[in-house]
Length: 284
Length: 120
Image (cartoon, rainbow over all chains, first blue to last red; front, side, top):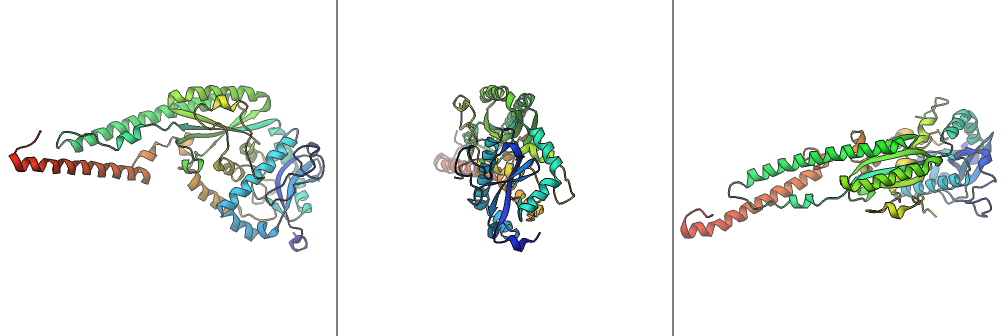
């Protein structure tokens, strides 16, 4: 695209795609009569770019931050990334609450040179985008994480009990063996319990996705994350699903586990698989 | 504002017997906005390979072991062969053991010097 002509106007950062009729006006606002637009990753007012029966939720962002070279640099900066990720998510949340049927969330940092280029994409992918919107219509994503409850046994282990002379080494090995067997037993029990929880929740969901478990350093949770799953749930079935979560929350402590719920999210984890490559470019 | 709070679970208080209930952490957000969502090539080639590299780097922070045996049981964290953290705990245990042993031997010596027979 002729990037130079539009350099002064900045670039167009695309957050989400929705049905044209779902989002009225020129800007995305928190509610229909709210005077001020939602702001995006660069603090810019979020606009609505229409084409056919689709609308792109997009914002003008400075090329100094979002052109290829600076963007690559920024993406390696966890603080920058965290800020942009939060804002990206906030815009998608806002679009989702404003849209009657739902929005397709885009992956972070999908950037176009200009409106014409964005419209070209909406045209080229019209079928896939429409199909994905249809599939995710009226659904939400709930995140469920299962953690181990932090137990006291670890601390006790580090202090070897006084033992008969000469028997310390053997007693230590015996104790280590017993601990290892106990660990394995606990792990098997936890594994069974986690499978039961996942199976029960999956029964009330349309679809499920398993994320890799989170390291406690980032999640700042004291326990180990055993299950990190997303469930696609119809809004109509929401109360059934959350009731099932509540049941699992209540059962979990007996297994030495705890269940944590996040959401409702826009169904990010189920959007990716719904559009295949339409034009052989470097999409996955 | 940047204040992303995913909406709270309808009756969060009754849920959170043991903990915070339903607020999303940074990892929750990153694993969605970076790893999920519709992938469409923009004009700005955020070389997806680069993103992949970044994602892998983040995974090193976010995640212990990818997939984690699909259901994510990670007891290997306490297995010394697999985890340096566990290895450190193991060493600490060994050190403690040795210190106890030395203390025992030291405590024994005055006795042996005095009456020359095994104590206890």
